[in-house]
Length: 386
Image 1 (tube, rainbow, N blue to C red):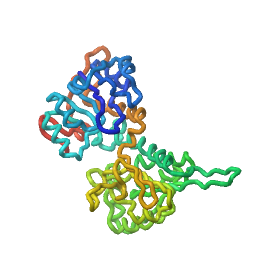
Image 2: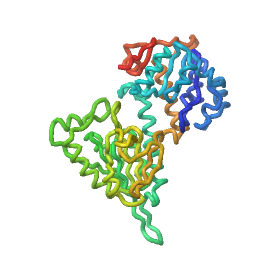
Image 3: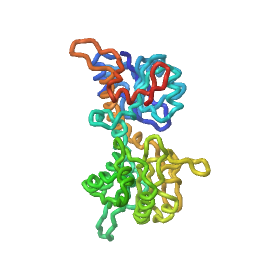
Image 4: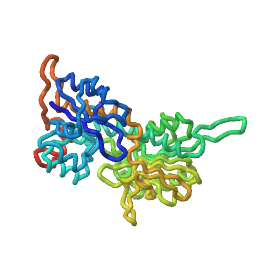
């Protein structure tokens, strides 16, 4: 199969869907891989490295015109127009973006959104959300440390003792856990909050302290358990009690990192304007839900904090609020390496590796496979998202 790898065109995107490591494996399976010139440069991968792996360097038209196109982000309208009808598209295609999916269907593309893979053991090796969130959680802490005007660790010097930074993590999924681990390595004192009681042990095993808000009803406990690895919206009664406990910690924090997202819904507000006002001057918030919150009264969209501005760093009430919407792209080389391996593992389901010495397998769609069925977004001119 002719597999194309175009350069990403989204602003600030540094990642690439195929690395020389995965290109070499695809070529070994009998596929022809064409990579747009310069596609990997922002991920520290040269054209020569792709060529050494057996890929061919080409232009954007040929990469987008391949039988199968591997991307990181949802293609733009111009990119879709350059893809041929019947082609296969694999990438992070925003499963809840109805307009975007309709555009892919109208172009008669067979599209797979890797974010929609079920959170099961079998799908772990192709879980792009986890691989990229892991990197984003790390970068969130490094970004916070960069904007915080003091040290993270406690330091005892001849000039006196510097206290360790107090870091509060809100939302303890993959990104939150990595944020805890990274902040701990830097010497911070960490507290973390999440609606799921099951994460308490994980938080403590990484050196953090769990902000415990007891459940008073069966409804609260059931919602807290979540579904498929994701949190569910919590009852208002529990949210009010959590808000009080979190507000106390936020007021004492030097750094707050919020990671809470609910698929298909606006990100919940975890850090109110009143909480921001209560924080010490010079404190930092890194809002990993930037641009995904509910619309504000003035039409702007924040994140876990309504004061957040997507892709901007702003000062509000003496607090620096970082609204980077693509932290993983700040670590382009490693983010690409992990993403490319996710893609390669997914392709085994639709392009099964041939036996040694046999020709490459043909593309297939096995709707009995739960991962294939869950990720298929468009096929034969129709949106197929379940």
